[in-house]
Length: 112
Image 1 (spheres, rainbow, N blue to C red):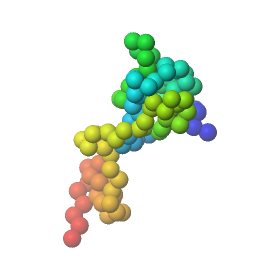
Image 2 (cartoon, rainbow, N blue to C red):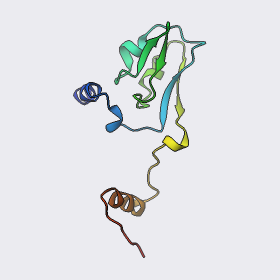
Image 3 (cartoon, one colour):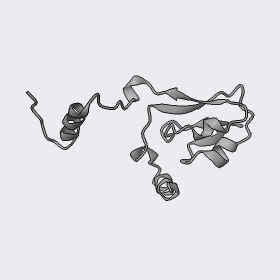
């Protein structure tokens, strides 16, 4: 069960530490019925907040899981791709992964 993990991430306001996605939820204000299901029942990290009579997504908290999108009765929420500068792309192969992992640890691998 991930409930305990999410509870800890919410408490420290850092869900991105564990979960990373190249997507973020976006709410279409024109079609949103403001029912609140997304914010009150669905978002596991409380990234959706009521603001100025409507709901908005705090993109710095949203983990892009999509849980809010599947239960929106008006289909007003969708996942949109983050800007390229904010994306975390997976390595192309095991060699690239090993080189990046070593660099993160301060090791300079020389592959020949």
